[in-house]
Image (cartoon, rainbow, N blue to C red; front, side):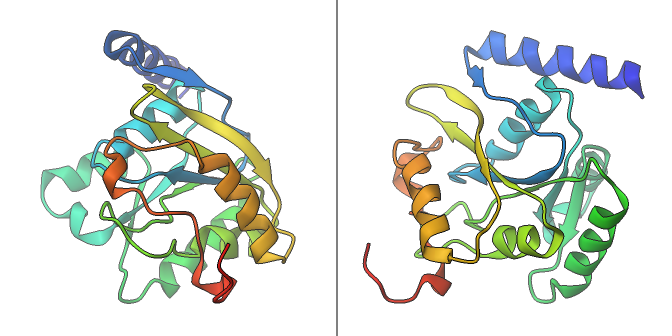
Length: 195
């Protein structure tokens, strides 16, 4: 396992150097890792590069339909967990159980839920962090500056608006690979308050 992690770290760091992407920040030992802005199919590769370059092996929630065919094998081997969006409860319960049993539990979630521009983020990252007591760490991809990495971590306080104000402040200058598809970090649970 240690040899495999060293190989993955070398591959990720070499790929980042070759493509002239700059990596910043460190992946925490455990937590819910937010991947945003989610504007391209390459975001999965970017989050994997962040994790591998830091020697981490997080689980990644991926829409179940991507697991059809040979791509499914690759997704599973790299930490992918199929999520049936029509019935996510069983997957979430299994993840909560895994988090209880693993002190180094890491889960990557793209809260935008789609690569298209949307109105709201999905609250799963926040709810799972609340239920497990794990911190949320803000990961990002910024195409214009060719930078990717991990930013600050926080524990949900229960004040969703205040917590999301922190998230919005961090992502204010992060554009993703296709900036026109970026969704502003906002949860439906924040209510109609216009901020």
